[in-house]
Image (cartoon, rainbow, N blue to C red; front, side, top):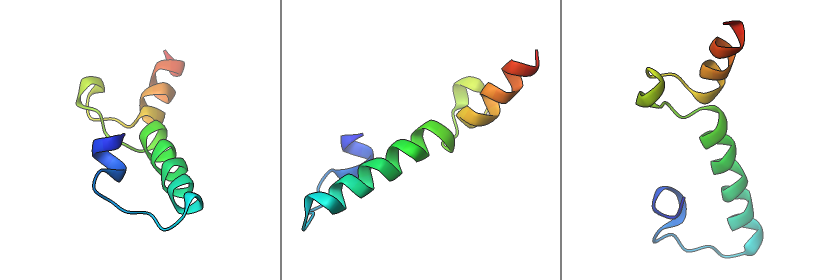
Length: 52
């Protein structure tokens, strides 16, 4: 997370940092594409495996 999200970025407040962390966690858990699971997002992968 450090290298992907906030490395070398300066925040004016803890609230701004917290907002970015929450947004990044949402992105990481739902939207990012992973080549290990055939180029699907985590949500797509979970949906596919639930159908099987």
